Amino acid sequence: MTGSTLSTTPPGVAPPAPRTHHLGIQTRDLENCAAWYRDYFGCEEKWSLDRFSDLTTSRLPGITRLTEVMVGDLRFHLFERDDADDTAPGGNKSQFQHVCLAVESPEDLTAWRDRWLELHGSGRYHFATDELPTDVVEDSDGVLSCYVVDVNGLEFELTHVPGGDR
Image (cartoon, rainbow, N blue to C red):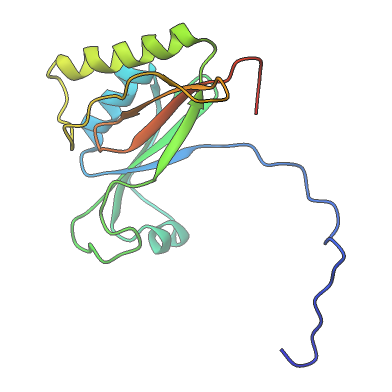
């Protein structure tokens, strides 16, 4: 790094904090996935696409369909890719590590866990894994959480933070 120096001055004020627009969920079975998000979260389908920009196809090679489902301000972009190229970015796997969603009360945590068990027990969905929801647990700081997976095996943490945000 000849000729360059590291600045100890912060780069200035950051722009306004972005807000979440959507969570992208890659799936191998769009109908099964959309049905689960509709029934578990209460999502409604907003729109679907089967033609994509060059940018989209360069980022998601083999994308065939995309459907937006939404509940409140929470949007999920559910998309399917063909099986042609498992070496593409992300392969053709269902993927993200986990997303944490806050709930209003400890009772809501139990209600979401019970809802998952009800939908799983209905036999209406094919789940990629046999993983059941975790118990609701309390961390040493009083935060309550449980984990559930969607039909693709993608993990959601549901959490209640007593006394507000952190």
